[in-house]
Length: 302
Image (cartoon, rainbow, N blue to C red; front, top):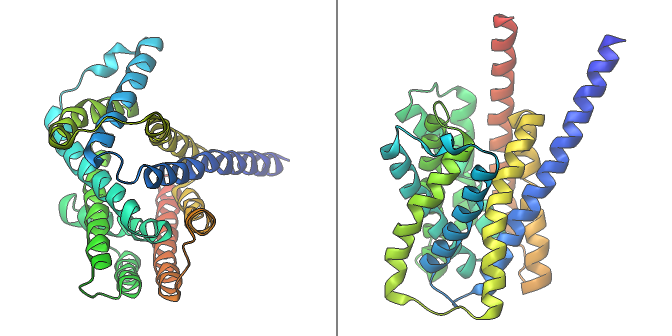
C-alpha cells in the first residue's frame, strides 16, 4: 500500500509538472509571435527597455505585497551585473533572430544553450565533463551544422546572431547557477530588470520611436510572458526532475513550427528536421545521464 501511495503522489507531481510546463510553452510561443508582430515598429533595445520597466514594476509590487523587502538586498551586485549583461545580449540576439528567421529555426538553435552551458560549467565551474555530455555536445554541434549548412548569405548572418545569443544565454545560465547559492529567485529577477533597464535604454535612445496602440499590446504581452515563462518553469522543476521538464520543453519546437506555418506560411525544411532530431537526441542523452548520476548519488548518500 505505501508503494501504491507513493506512485500516486509521483504521478500527481508529474501531471502538475505537465500543467506548469504548458504555461511555459504557451508563454514562449506568445512571446515569439508578439516579437514577430512588432517587426521593425520599434528598436529591439527599446523593446527590451519596456520589457524591463514593466517587469520591474510587477516584481517590485510582488515583493512589497509579500512583505519581502529583504529580497532587495544583495552582496553580489558585480555578479548580477555580469550575469545580466550576458542575459541582455542573449535576449537581443533572440529577438533579432525572430524578426529575420523562421520561428522554428530560432527555437531549434536556442536548444543549443544546454550544450554551451555544459562546456562553460566544465571550463568555469570545474564541473565534470562525462562521456555522455561530450557525445551530447558533439551531436549538438553536428545538428547546428546540418541546420545552418554554413554559407555567406544574409540568413547565415542571422543564424550566427542566434548562435551567439545561445552562447550568451549559456553564460547567463552558468552565472545564475552561481547566484542561486546565495540569492533567491525574486532577488535574481528583481536585479535582472533593474540592471537591464538603463543598459537597454542607453542603447535605444538613438533610435527611439513612439509605439502605436497595437505595438503596446505586443509589448505588454512580451513583458508578461517573459515573467510567466520563468515562473511556470520554476514551479514545474519543483514538481518533477530536470530531465522530465526539459523533455516537455522540447514540445516548444513543434508548437512554434505549427504557429509559424499557420500565421506566416513558414515551411519545415529537411535540414531543420534532421538537425533538430540530432540535437534532441544529444540533449536526451545528456539529461538521462544527469538523472542516472543524481539517482546514484542519492542512493549512496541514503
